[in-house]
Image 1: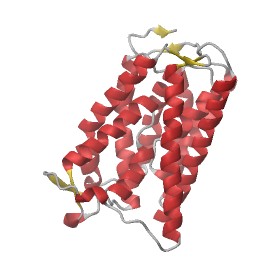
Image 2: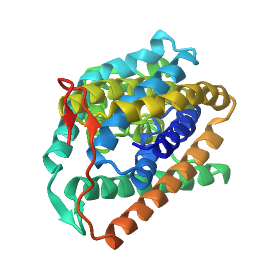
Image 3: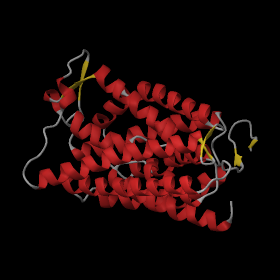
Image 4: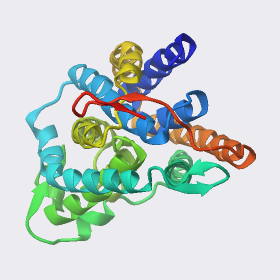
Length: 307
């Protein structure tokens, strides 16, 4: 990696770390497309390195917030489902590595780009649409999955006894979040924050804290899984962490001053912007008939170098 690429990684890590603190997200949904456009590394190394990097800003953002025991109940309940999902998603990405996907790109690169485009478009469009409905006095009803009463149940963060949800439903939701985390490198905040707010009826600020804790769990589990497959580039991770941890601390202070509706709308526009970056990436892949990207990554598995 050249010094210019290292500088890009530092700046990108700082910006995404700031957003992680503001919105209670890992920020990988923005960081992976940016690094795909700017760095000449295989996509599986970018995904694995970003998952490892997310541990830094997620930890810093958590330390900047007042996390109570009530905020940990939901994340710890989902830990098993997250582990299963992360393992499945990481394995799928590994199976696609090295196979041709057309236009000189690997199947993994195309699959990750398309997966990002679909996920970002759906989540971003929904958040912008919903926030504008709320501003117009026509808010959507929330807590749809609270009506699924499969026993046992548990109280939601800040919801008291009236706000309860089925533990099996929460765990299966966590499996889906984990698959996205392992395959796309996102820490879960992209779908967690809107999922907790609209599907489970959690208040926005409580959902931000829960998302941060779950994002940390996904990043921790994903780092181990991607490290096992040799997808972690330690030099790239170090560059991202230089700016990321500082940005997360600043972002957490800013995010706590914003109201829920404003927070959701700005998050929605951020997701839409990330989707546009993926469109640019797909256009580049279509226009550039070339061999799959090559590069070397410092593996955290047995200290080997991955070609």
